[in-house]
Image (cartoon, rainbow, N blue to C red; front, side, top):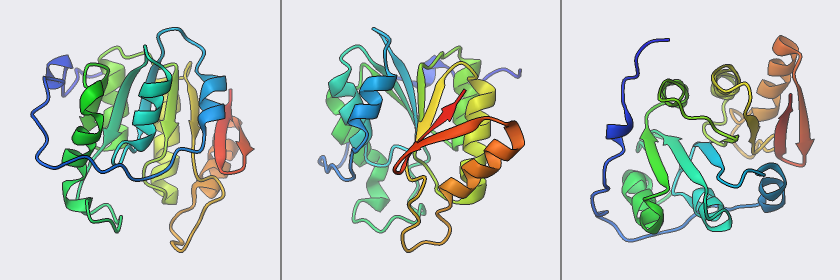
Length: 195
């Protein structure tokens, strides 16, 4: 494995955010998280953090949780929201009180997963809720499984396609099963690799 492009020194003290907090999104998987996260000192990687609502929930429910949030936080993410241009600053504002337990990893999901592996991060759970197009979901699941085969890997929007035909999470996971033989369990839109 190659040496990491970033190191723990890349998780410095945060600069004060330039915008006020603005929590947006939803958390619908509390029961699943409570059932799956069993460690006393859990480590979780969140792929796709947006403004941090799921991150806030996890940090509040699990007081010893260490969280790594991977997201590009770029303005061209296709999300129609007033905070799109300041999504990273908003994320920092929302998570300010938890900065000692959460690290932003501002890059592509595949690069972030590889880099966290190179840094020796050992997640108990990886929650994938980033880009929802077929090729990116397939890449995220393959990369997460290759880098962290012992981790629980789960995510959102298995059946949700909305208005955007590119949101093909379930189709990508079906392909993953065909390619690897690893089945996917679902509970509505929530999905979990059955390893």
